[in-house]
Image (cartoon, rainbow over all chains, first blue to last red; front, side, top):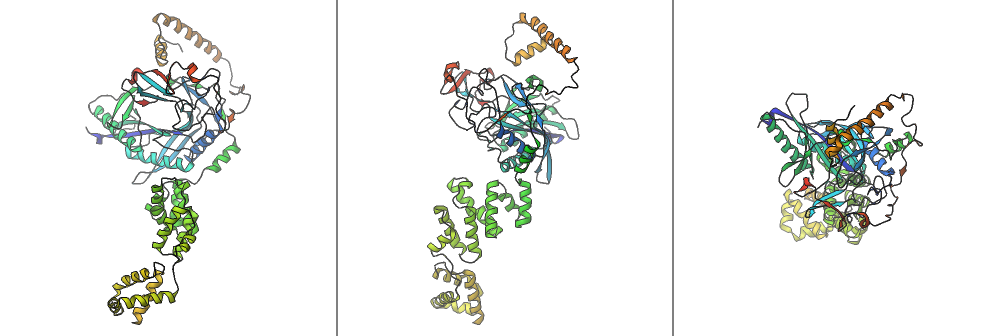
Length: 480
Length: 105
């Protein structure tokens, strides 16, 4: 097989569950993990006569996502029925959008390692989810749970602009981060709130015409998407090498086996017999409403990275870590502003704070040490009022008790002593107790300074300001 | 545009409808009759009429996200052909003899 002769072409369809409390067209809860079919009603069960009414919040979240992806939001969009037969689709059609979607023509800038690449977003449209079919629960039967039926989704369809599995992975990770910043979805592949279908084809290098594509489904992680694309590209290259044709079909990825099996022959869009949904009028977005949505789009990851670089003068690696998640990023920024010490705040957030959050298992929004409190602690260190080692002890207490840093420092007598009289007294005692080291140090053996500082810190029970101890020892050596 | 026997068979397959061969000619003729009527309607000049002319309001009504579910007048068990552990039960699909969880399109 000669994969080098061929180029991979990938387009992705990403289904994102919108973070609403109720479903797209009825008031049933969208909560994940509830007992089967408990979140259903006459509308999402498609009982005769039940009519859908669109969820305002779903429209708001969908519009915000579309704007953040650089799309043109259309003032009028139309819902359509996508007809297909499947037991977890009670109506026999899915309410989706077809020829008049919510938004079109956006793009996402993706870091592909050796530079930035713009991946086109063809369209963002709204639709409802289907239920869930469990084929392995009972022998000879399929179990249907319709709790998910009618949950609001957006489908983000990319242009076939990706040329490798790595680019596809980078696009997905960038997209997920943008959606996290927008707070429009939980974007959890494990819970199914983000699902990816990948269209992949192979064509001889240099050929403009696209090859026949296949659609890969059932990937449960971004690395799974990358592996599935590599697998399918290799399969298509082998077919083309043998002079055979690629058939347009849907394949189901089996992560455990690392292979794909044919699901069904791909249906064309005309097979879905789309037609405008007669139970819903067109969705009309007014300019004043749109202005409100535009104003609600927060600072996005790329802009935040640039601003952090300019404002806080941090390195790329720190910036990537600190902007990975929006809440962590907000936490860092608040601590940096309050302390006036961005580098110190970065080190605390990436180190002790993350470790404590991971150990406690609570989300950062519920973490006991609020950024303002961390900022105060950092400020105490910067002002020389507590040592770095004492700050670690204080932080541990803050995690346990939620008390402010200054109070803990006071209660545990960890406030540093910067008073020359007290420090000089401790130095005198140390020099008297260690006459050999004192003699060599005063004779010019500078490397002993660290040892002597350590003795002084121990004698002061960690309270002496080490900076001042160093200064006083240095002046003592100069005088000696 | 005329419907052929192949079109009718294809659509019946998509809808999982068992179609007796003796009904085929009648259905082709019936569907072509409907399309012929559409052809007549299509000749009407509607260029000056807004496509939403019959729509009484300017947008589909929206509801608040906090509205609760509609009550069920009868229990799910009363109308589901088969229910077990809260799941609706249907015969295993022939396409899923080797079982796994999944959703169509």
